[in-house]
Figure (spheres, rainbow, N blue to C red):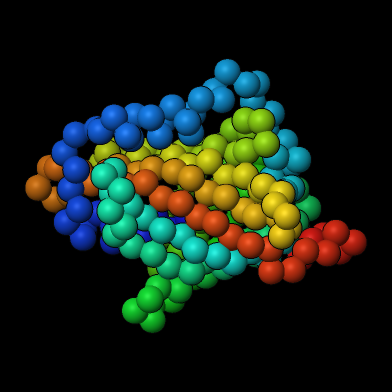
Amino acid sequence: MDDRQGDNLGRDGVGIHRWSPWVAAFLLIVFGGASAQAQPTRAALEPFTGHWKGAFVAYTAAGEQVDSLTAEHRYRWEDDVQVGTQIDRYPDGRVVRATARNYVENDTLYCEVTHEDGSTTVYRGRHVGAAVVWHRRTDAGLIESFRERVVETPDGPEYHIDGFGVYPNADGSASYLQFVGRYRAVHQDSSKGRE
């Protein structure tokens, strides 16, 4: 997940200045499994190993689409760290690349995303049921939380991302966005680490 996407989305002037009942319901769905025991192990990250491609779309809390892109993610293991590459292709031709490191440390899941400019965004996660729930909060008030899981469909595995973000604006207001990612497996070979 590229945090600069959120910065770009927040600057588009999409300001929702209060939490809507829809956003509250969405939060309940995303975090409704909080009573489940956290199980931070390599097994929590294993379903994401492979090559994935699909649509990532951002919406206002009112459901208005504000951005979209085609994402391509590849994940593989290097010892106990799941390493990845992420390529986001926007309709205007922009291409944004990042690398990722996912790992477990002191019973907490971590996702470190390093951007083209060298900056790194860190998410903390927990394993809830068949999903990983990632979260980050900055001192400036930016909040992102999302649930990732791999779902078996009749057409094969699908990588689902459902989340929300709160993006502070320069005028003190904030943009509240929800986002949805649906990626299909490009190539999965279980005999060779599924990539």
